[in-house]
Length: 101
Image (tube, rainbow, N blue to C red; front, side, top):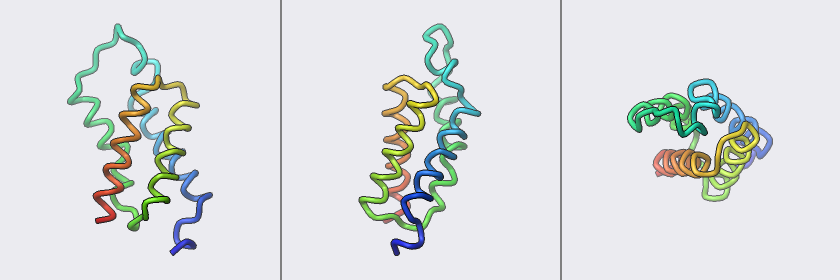
């Protein structure tokens, strides 16, 4: 099982997911309190950006945690504020948990 999704691929996949979020909802917009984007629109953006995570092979607890952590770090590197990073990471781990059941 370890060979199917090694840690290096998890990191790369997390970066791809974060870049997908950034393309659809750039940090300039997400971090600007003057810009108002509806929660429904943000949910739709997250749905599109994270849809590929739903199709992953089932991941165990530690692999999900590794992917979530890498995703959070990449979002922070891109420039998102902590609140958005936490919300996006929770959404990703929730999707992964559902996919693994």
